Amino acid sequence: MKILVTGGAGFIGSHVVDLLVEAGHAVTVFDNLSAGVRENVRTEANLLELDVNSVEAARAVVDFAPEAVIHLAAQIDLRRSVADPVADAEINILGGVRMLQAAAQARARTFVFASSSAVYGQSPAVPTPESYPTDPVSPYGAAKLAMENYLNVFRVTHGLHCAAFRFSNVYGPRQGGKGEGGVVSVFANDLAVGRPPRINGDGEQTRDFLFVEDAARLLTMAAERGMDGVFNASAGRETSINDLYAKLSRLAGVTTEPEHVAAVPNETRRSCLSAEKVAQSGWRAEMKIDDGLRQAWEWFSTRPR
Image (cartoon, rainbow, N blue to C red; front, side, top):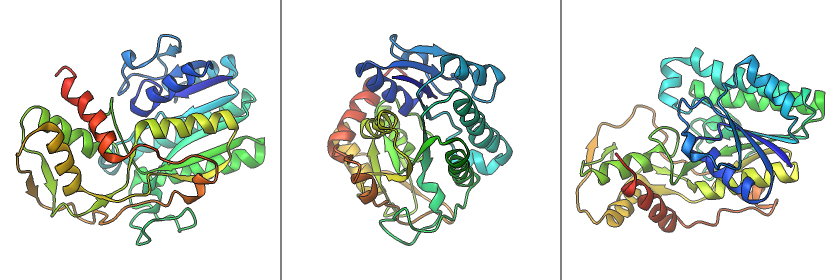
């Protein structure tokens, strides 16, 4: 297949490109390299340094005429979205709609979108199913939900297969310090340089951590199969921040105590997504968190600083 990956030089995107190339697909990558890294992209893929909001990117979609688009290019910093919601919307809504429109013009069959658990807001239902009402409390979450609505419009008006995956906290090698799974990279980088990590509040807040290769496998499968609909993408297991730190510190071989700082106002206490719906497609998270953290630590502890 001919498959386009936007944000393909980034954390999740580069792992998706790895799998697509290994499967023999013809892959083109769009990335403006504001966060992505050129060296992350396999040489077998065609990397174009383009911004998804540009006219050039829209034209390049039509020229490539992909059968599937995996749209991962995004502004992923929730706090930045609060500080500058207009910039967040320009990237996460307008950039996404431009790619949707170009995909329809190119007569693509499938559009795969990385949504987020942030669309649920402060959900008291744990684990949270897709049927739970959406109620985002950040511009980032609102933008992701807006894109899900646009996907539905293009599904109806253009017959485009549209799959939106509400990701939990993705972590693993090549991760930066932003995004929903960024706590893993922050802790790992602190431990690697001997700096005591900071934990907000008492550290008993929980998150649902998904290994990046599991996430990439799902996105790849969605493009290949032409999946359609809205799905949670998660491991379906809660891990407290304290437990996460304990696991990473053991891997690092240190006994440094973390520094507990003031809790973030209105921070979600428990977050875990139900993975039952996506399991019906044949996918489930395979990586156990201890094994995933080991791979992540090996990468973070050896990369140049």
